[in-house]
Length: 224
Image (tube, rainbow, N blue to C red; front, side):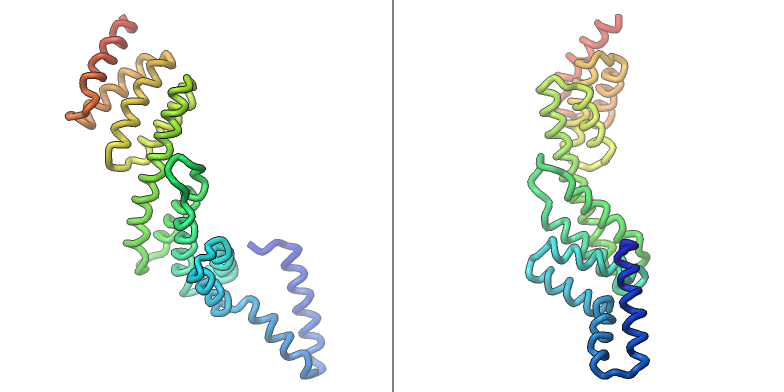
């Protein structure tokens, strides 16, 4: 959204230029044309696409965002939203680093799916799966760090985020096991028992089977 101060300045300039234009001064015509071009959908999109092609992700992001702010219902809006999401995606750091950009990418691709019947639906869906797996792996690594540091409530939050993401693969199995351990270490016996059982239910052939059996025995002894 354009800030109020900027909008007021733009409107004031437009009024001044339109007032001058009534005098039909030829020297003012290029200024009026330039003022219009600053907000032209084609001009903004062309600039954004050139920046994207040059791999200037930050600058391209700003232009796609500007396009969407000025032309939210334009026929190119789905394209701008998809390319905006890709600008975030191209800058996602390695697993375990700050997840802020990955979270922005996730939100941006989700907005792509809010547009009905676009050619970007399948690509955005595939990207969302990839990004959510990345975020799950990051949350698991951070959770493991907190667990090793004895910060069990913080670890629980991270492991639970992995489970909430509902991604396929071993990261969910790993997070469920360590969530049960974190609950145990935090003194939450009932939740630890429930989580251990949930692991066995979801992964009958889990490689943690022997460890879970020992965990359940410890928890049973504490509960008794």
